[in-house]
Amino acid sequence: MKIATLVFTAITVLLFPSCIKMNYKGSITKVECPRFSPVQVVENTPQIAIISGNCEDYTYRSEKVHAAIQYFVEEFSYAFETEEEDTWRRLSRLKIQFSSIPKEVKNVYSIEGKFYNKRSVTGLALDENWIWVETRTRYICESSLIHELVHIMIWRDQKVHGDPDHEGGEFSGWTEQHTELINLVNEALCALEI
Image (cartoon, rainbow, N blue to C red; front, side, top):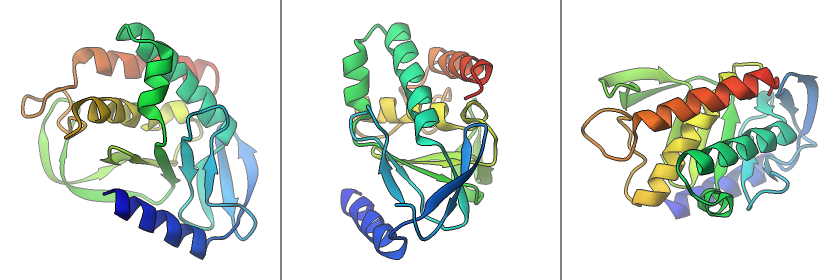
C-alpha cells in the first residue's frame, strides 16, 4: 500500500503542479489550478498532509483542518487516557484527500455493523496512512473527517485494519466510546464554526 500511496502522490504532483485556493466560506475553499500545490502539509502537525487530487474541486482550509485535528487530539487523548504527544505520533504522516466528488463503494458497513454490498459514502479509511473525505458540507464538523481519524487511530494500533464494521461484531477495535467521541468533537467543532 505504501508504494501505491507514493505513486498516487507522484502522479498528483506531476498532473497538478500548482493550484490556487479561493472562495472562503465556512471551512471550505475552492481549489483552482494551476497555482496551488495539490499536497500541502498542515502547519504544526507531524507531517499530516492535505491532498487535492482534482482541479476545480473543493477542500477544507488548512488552518481549519489543523484546528479540527488539534481538538480531536485533545479529546481523544482525554477519553482514552493517552498523552497528546502519543496521539499526534499515531497520526503522523497521514494523508487526507478531500474532494466534493462523491464515492460509491462495495462491501461497506454502517456504524451499527450492518453490511452493504454497495453504498454511497462520505469518507473512507483507504489504508493506515490515507483517508478520503467528501467536502460537500460547509464545515468540517459536518464531514466524516473525525470519523475517519478514529479509523486511523484503530488501524495504527491494530496494524491490520481500522475496524471497518464499527460497532459490529466481525472486527475488533471500535467501541461506543469512539462513536460518542466523534459526536462530542463534531458538536464542539460546529459550535466553533469549523
